[in-house]
Length: 203
Image (cartoon, rainbow, N blue to C red):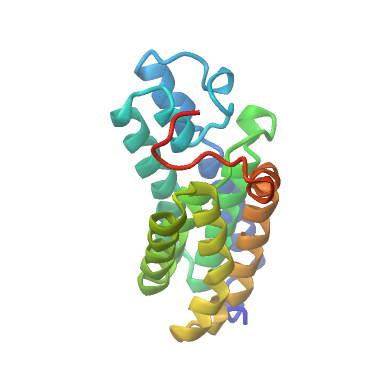
C-alpha cells in the first residue's frame, strides 16, 4: 500500500520541505491581486481557491487559479520523481497538498485542496487522476454540488488506485481524502442540511 522507500532520508526531507513551500503559494490571492479583485479572504466564502475566485465574476482569473493550483501539485511530483525517485514523488505530492491546505504564508489558513489533489494524482498516475476527474464531473452533473463532487472523488480515489493497478498509492490517496473531508467539514454540514449552494445557482 506504500511505495518502496529507496531514497535517502535527507533527500526525502528536502523534497517535503520544498514541495510544501511550493504548495503554500496562494495562487488564488495572487490572481485576485493581479486582476484587481480585492482581498479574496473578504469575498464569498473567504477561501483562496478557484471556486471563490470565480465568485468575483472573473472567469479568466478563476481558470488561471485552477490551473496553477493543480499545477503546483503536479510540478512538485514530476520534479521529485525526476530528481530523486518514485518514493519522493509521493512525498512531494502530499507535501504540496498540505502546503495548499495549510500554507505558511497565510498563517496556515489555506484552501480546500481539490485542484491540487487532482493535479497531484494526474502527475503520479494519470489514469487514476483522470478517473478522479471523471468521478467529479459525473457527480457534479448529477447533483450540481461542487463540494459533494470533490468529496466523492476523494473518497473514490483509494479504490481507483487499487482497481487501476497502483496499490502503492492507496495509503497516499486515503491520506489526501481524509484531509479533503476535514477541509470540507462546513460543506458537509450544509450538504446534510440541504443548504449547500448548487453549481450555476446564485445564492
